[in-house]
Image (cartoon, rainbow, N blue to C red):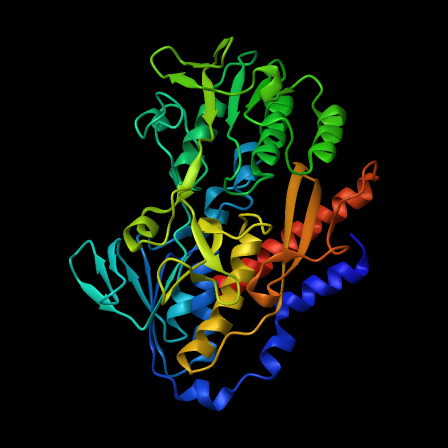
Length: 423
């Protein structure tokens, strides 16, 4: 990626130009009730910025968990000595800003009455509702893969107990036994994520179970940063990683937990460790709020990420239909900032304004080396489009110093985004 593109992204992250002309006096007087459901990178980030933009507003963040477990870097928990506790973040930093944080499960939304119902049956009234619900699995989209099956064949696509389960299974693996991974067709959370995971599991096998091998069964024939990943795999894991695309019978159609196996059209594979990444959809509360469509995802307008199905409700992050932006933590964080600016204007009687958005996805290929892909986008004319000539990918054939520098950038990004969201 060239320097101009990186500067563009950094300016976008800071949102300096977008905030210079804000009507701060009008914002300061606004006492709107804003409820945010979901405390990940989207929800925490939008809450923090709204608290700054609307100091008189009543902001409530609702999440079922008292601690957020981040997905970025969780693949390193599987393949290196990184601890799951390194992925965990609390909400004390948000509470210190005057944000009310409720550890509760939101079970329903009334878009007409503008209320949120919690599992305790308590209701919250809102003027604007922001959903950052993440993803849920499409259980049984792969025959036999339901919630019970995930206890044996973990997906680990929501970081937390599933991450621990998969790591424990790898630790229990006998040297020489195979590991299987199934990857779905798009769209799904973090397009390069399965291939970073494959790299980290292959690293684990190479260094701890050298006679074992990972077989990746993929429902696609191409994927994000494919050439870069395959270059790294050929260099680092020629004996420990095999990838099969859809045209090579890589689509998993059925799982059998009793037999410890998965089936494609023509083969049955057995292994003591099977990681199934299933098809996905927006988190359940999106359905309850009426903001997801027949695809299972949530259409939005890109100026303030307001739902096109339910006025007054905004949706962020992985749950959205926001192509060409990918479903990533970086995207969720940027979308949160754009949403916060848009909501602040809307509750102050103003219209949202267009701006520039960006995304960068870092992926580790070894614990010391990483690659990246970046995009820059415009939401001008209420249409989200890639800006031609901006963004880019890591160079092929780069030396180890460049790959190590990208790994350092990835670590710096993770520290920045988590500090910015959670304090």
